[in-house]
Length: 199
Image: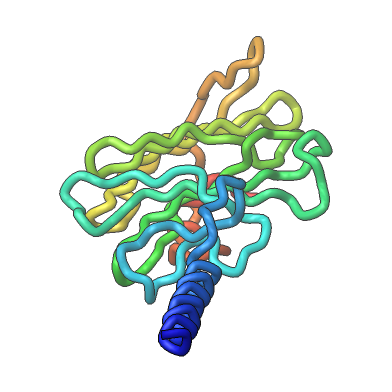
């Protein structure tokens, strides 16, 4: 009887140690810290816009009418080693992602810190179109306005109205159409589909 009791105790101890080991290797609790992350694409094989970009964070992700596997993903890329108040561009990006690819539709800066530098745009998703309205204040009280629509089904700039104007009471008053239309980009990080700041 004594040997049988010893055997049961040994068996019970082994089972408990096994349970303890399994518990120790379970997944840790999910962190709520704001960390760089990938945009959801519906396919683990396609990297999100923030993949391998240490200063990039996904700020929002929206579904798109009529495109069940696509999302509009907005990211923010902080200027490395600087605070937003130091006059560096906090780059905001607007991506179209789906199961097969990602396309940079447009990019701007959260704030404009000097004449002729890039400023912020008003970007709105409406059905399966993206409307982009952009004002850039320039030297000598000049300004430039962009009013554009991107077709998210065709992934193409559907309409682009560019005007130059003058600044009056902190407003840009359009005067005439811009005589130079920048070429459409290829949707890569360095060449957004819609160019806002001509630099």
